[in-house]
Image 1 (cartoon, rainbow, N blue to C red):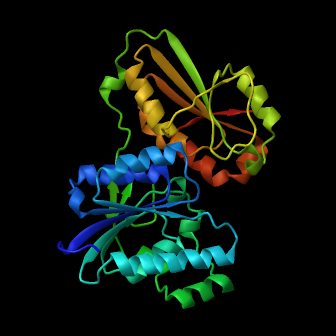
Image 2: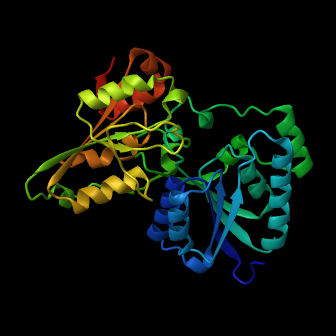
Image 3: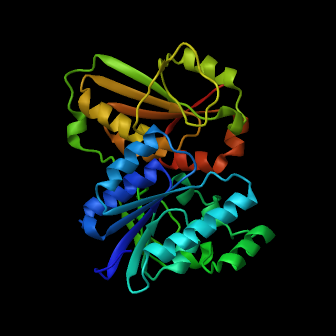
Length: 331
C-alpha cells in the first residue's frame, strides 16, 4: 500500500501515444519518480506497447497493468470492474490525495478510479485527433445503455464524462492552435516532436523516401486495390503498417519497428541528413501529429482521398485542410 507522502501523481494510459505524452509531462514538470504511479489499460499488448510502457516505468515507482480485452462480454467486463475495485482498496489509501492525469474522459474504468480515490486535481491530455474533432465522442453527450447504468449502480461509479470534463484543471495538447475539449485558458501546449532549425541541416539530399501509413482499409470503406494502384503510381516504396491491418501489401518495403510512426520519422530526419521524406496516408491522425515537422524542408505530408471517403470523414479532412496538409484525389 502507498504510504508516507501525502500527494501522488497518477497517470492512466491506454495507447503508446498517451504514454509518450505522459513521459513528456513528467519530464517537463520534473515530477519526481517517487511520487508517480502509472496504470496502463491495454486492449492488446504488443512490441510497441511494451517499448513505451518500459520507458515510462523508469519515471515512476509503481506501474500496474490491466487488460481491457473483454470485447462485448458482460461477465468479463463485470469481473474487470470488480478487479479494479479490489485493486484500489488494497493499493490506494484515502489518507493520500492524487493529481490524476489521463486522456480518455469517456472511459468507465477511469470514471471508477476517479470515484474511488481521493482526487486532488484532474489533468487531461490528448488522446489523438478526437480531441480536436468536434464530431468525436469527446464532444457528444455520453450515451448510457441500461447495461452501463446497471454496472455503474453495482460498482458505485459516480463520475461520468460530463462531470470529469467539468473538473479538468489543465489540459496538455499536442495540437497547439486548435480548439480542444476545454477552454483555451486551460490548454497547455506540449511539443513532443518539435521543429528545430537543426532538422534543416543537410549534407545535400541524395534520396527521397516515400512512406505510406497503412490503415485498416476495410474499416474505412476503401477498396484495397485502389490503394495499391496509387502506391504504385506515386512511386511509394515504403509502408508503415497499422496494427489492425489484416492483409499485406505486396511490392513495398515494410517498416518494422518498436516505435510509433511519429517517433520513428522524427528520429529518421535527425539521423539521415541526406534524405528527404514524403509521407502519405488516407486519414491517419499521425499526419496531424507530425504536422509541426513539416516546417522542415526535408519532410512533407499528404493525404489521399476519394469523393466518398472525404464526404464520410469531412470533419477530419477539414482539420487537415485547416493545417494546410497537401492532398491528392485518387481514383
